[in-house]
Image (cartoon, rainbow, N blue to C red; front, side, top):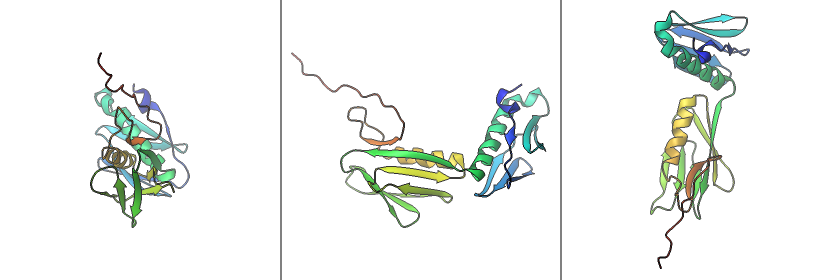
Amino acid sequence: MSRIGKKLIPLPAGVKYKVEGNTVLVEGPKGKVSALVAEGITLETKDGQLHVNRASDKFAAFHGLTRALVFNAVEGVTKGWTKELDIVGIGYRAELKGKGTVVFTLGYSHLIEFPLPTGIEVAIDPKQTHLTITGIDRQKVGQVAADMRSLRKPDPYKNKGVRYTNEKLKKKAGKTGSK
């Protein structure tokens, strides 16, 4: 039996779900999110909690996956998901242009305009070096954060670039003089 699949998902007040074919639509105070439900997996509510059940051991591989996807959808419509990025480097910064575009200055000869997908919001601190990415879809929030980080990955020698807030980096030693 899947350890993750057996865990119950608490359903807060105001959260509803509807299964349509192989997708589940979770609706809550922050919006709507859909998640995939694998074949042979069923969802049922008991005592205000959501149970994820599988038909047989043939579907064991998808039991925990489906539970995690539904849990992420429920958490997203109640609390939301956030990722934080730090921009490190002299002259490196980000600023909002309108509502749906972030403009990065990352040491290149040009500015980088990053359009935000629907459902994603970015907040930038006054120093323009700390970004907070929020949304209700965990996968989309993580993908946007990864795409922003890939614009200028942290340099292993000077540790300059875009990184996650609590990311630990290994700094490499530079060249040493030969004698």
